[in-house]
Image (cartoon, helix red, strand yellow):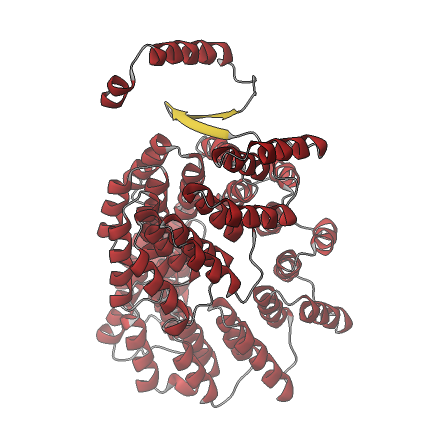
Length: 610
């Protein structure tokens, strides 16, 4: 800037400053160079004579690239009002539309499009492509397609904009249809076109079609740019062909953050979390996305403590976590029951002014519900300005798990009243609530409405809920009839629900049938043998109980040890039966022995009162 000002001084002395072309070079330097100074740029712009439209365009571009779209639009308005001689050109409007994509409302962009038509630039292909791109960026697919169809002329950029726009908006089949139309009209694809169609295959998880396009790229010798290789890797990852993705990754001459992140996410998705960690550690640089991929991979692998440890490591960097990071961490807290850490994350979100999106709000509701604070879950739910079906499902399931059956059912009907459609998970939650609350008639009604009103086919878990609901209430014959009427083969959850109900009500004959069905499905589950033996013993059938225990020993079946966890001062401790690895094992045993001795000294009534 110092050298630029020296040049400017010489221009003033020699009088060259009045030359519009010469002055425009100064403005361009101040607007878009690495040493940009937009305030100084605007001062030159406002105090110069005979400026050309390039000077205004480059200043608008500088403000747009600096994340100041509103200032760009104010400059455009000043251009229109200040100079009668100057008028916007076909470079002005693409810049303005690019600025408008960064505004929260589409209104300003539509106003710019109105000016495009007013000044006659709607026949300019360059401007038209920018209009299409803007509308697609705002999700206005139908309007973008209309502009595309009515264009006077179309080039490869037009096709690439519309194809990739549909891909970004989750319409892969429409993108592939447009690609077919493009071929029919004789336009040859380039690497940008291929990114669009390969990404469509990735969204559809269509491996065969993806391979065909990969071969087409090789046959036509289309340039294998880094973004195209990344798209191919992503397609192979999503289609489950990690070998092909690895081959492309290893041959890349230059790997970007996207390249590494694609592979890390793939390894995490398919349970190769150690390979993901190795690649993550090898990354020369990182942004928030690979950190999120690594944390998400640990969660997919059910290594929740490692996910939270990675988040703690993440906080030591200069990179700021985003909403996706918070969703992952809240998911880990939900699975571990780590309420204190979940509350800390909630405070972190508020402190750093992270936007509470529907996804993040739903994750908070889920965390509080699963960690035992249903009141806070309801508070977060009530404060959310927007809720999706998933949000409603989360609170319905949460209330069900906390035994508030009536509130769960009430939220279910409220969800329907606001115009949202329940899915199979929603029905599972509300049927579970009916089961816990003993709401027989309500459960029957909701179960019948699944297919008759909402066209949702019940799965084994729904049948399991109904069998448990009817069985616990003593309607064992009706519960068994529900199993017989199932269009699919009953699984262990369905037969287990009937078996448990039979044991409660002492129906040994039906319980025996259910138990044998369970053993047919999984003869190695020690819990079934133990429960069957207990049912026989409770029914005074001691010989049969002994036979089951003997059979269990002969088959070498052992009961799966139980596992529990508890959070203390933000740290989660896990305990498994007969596991002595905990560092405070001896102290814990001594404490349990002390508690047991105290309990033995209390009579039954005193114990209940306490």
